[in-house]
Image (cartoon, rainbow, N blue to C red; front, side):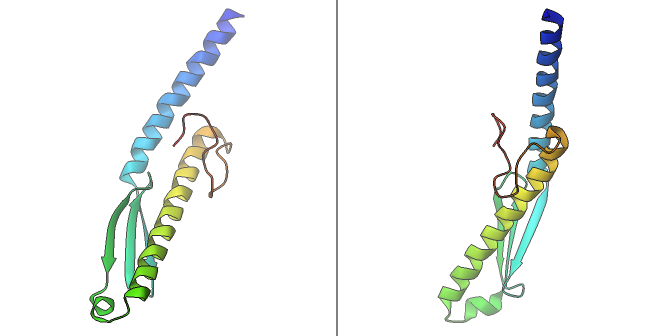
Length: 112
């Protein structure tokens, strides 16, 4: 019985190590959301960090700051959604599909 428990513990440690490796890899992956016909582009990594926001000069010159704010918010939301989906896909390889949905990808203890 102790050997079986040791095997389970060893598997859990291997899984934790692989999770840490995947999380590190996600930090190197990028997603980009483009909104407003490309007027605003937001780049995020696989760890849901916003890395860059690019705003087209044409929209900055206009007096429509409300529209710019909405586009930036929309771009950030889309980039984060894509980042969560990327993370869910990467982690599902490890968890065999147990990681949850794209909107709430991590139900396992110790995850993000």
